[in-house]
Image (tube, rainbow, N blue to C red; front, side):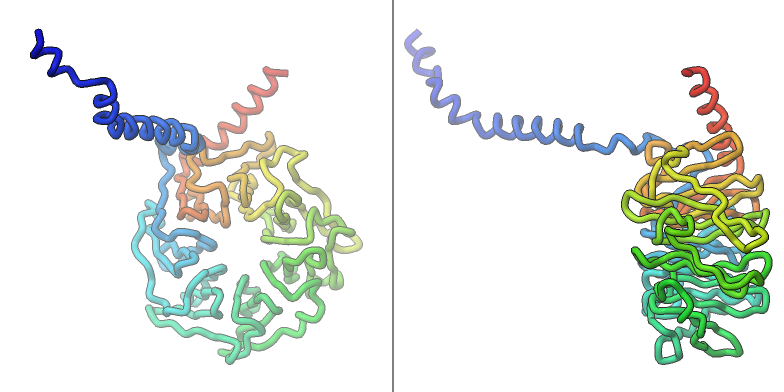
Length: 366
């Protein structure tokens, strides 16, 4: 009995011996609980069937198609994807200066035009040439590109407009007629009018040039939801849409041409069911349905039946949808700050069925 008493360690010795282990266990429990609370509940366990993400390009700002390739512009440069699957094919060596690509234009001649923070790059047959202010650009940051029916390439920069024609860059005199020289989007309507979106608060807006009905300008006072205009879209009926917004204000609006020229005919905002204020991107599909991307609120689908939103919990790789384009097979391509999401045609159809289901549920609830 004396031996067993001597072998028993005092309570103080036990605490000194085991306190490091207890501390590790305690810290582990605390971090585990914190991690469970901080883990993003928006991320789904698995994306829906037909939703494929290529995360390699990173922050994507532009997508186009040329020669059987999906070309992707991102902050890290130019990338290629397989249009049939969305599989990543690699980065394109278009020059070290090609970074933060903001605009892509596939010319009918087989040329890919790349607008980026260091100028305008013409990429053709694996050869490239970059044009800068030394070549006539009004500013090195190229934000927007468009080709009109005459073949002229319009270039929108952070300090005005330029053209590319006859093999050289020419400063556009139309710059002096813009609401703001900070050009963010350019589009040509069905009558040949050139629409220029300026991003400036409070002086930005939309200027319509060469429209046949006289030059027009649209600001807050003339119906724009917000003076910061992010994208322009000409729909199947020939109406023009503007995506606007900054921070917690904005929305989309539709222009229609009347006897006195163009006017804002309709607006769509949070009050109408949009999930967010700043509309970042737009696309109209074959069915005439409108897709809208947001800076902080994912994606919305607007059909004749209503509006339904999709976010990270539905499978989006990021809450900011920077660009939306349609593929030749009817698939949908989304550029996000976490790569490219390709949604195949059957998956797009299922998303549209969700609109009807959502509206049915709402009706039943009422």
